[in-house]
Length: 116
Image 1 (tube, rainbow, N blue to C red):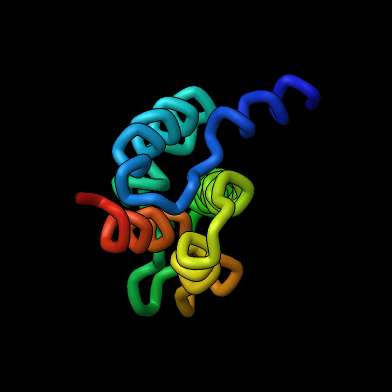
Image 2: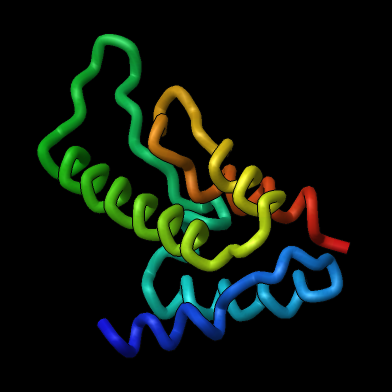
């Protein structure tokens, strides 16, 4: 756990546009290492049953894993920011499906605000 804290200190975002591209690259690398890059980029999605259908046990298991990875990604984003604008971008990244936070929406919010 101590090593994890050291990693996060290197990933803190200042809230300055000039620092964003480097922070983004570092955070993507960290996300790849932790296994939640697809959740940030929105290339991995929650499985939703079609009308009248029920998810299989395997799909439910996949969704549980997906939700855990999304929570991890969303939490790490929160832990790596220092300024109120970034906090708002991440804090407000909630959806009806993910009322506790959607990592992909948070990531996109950050890009919309800070990417040059």
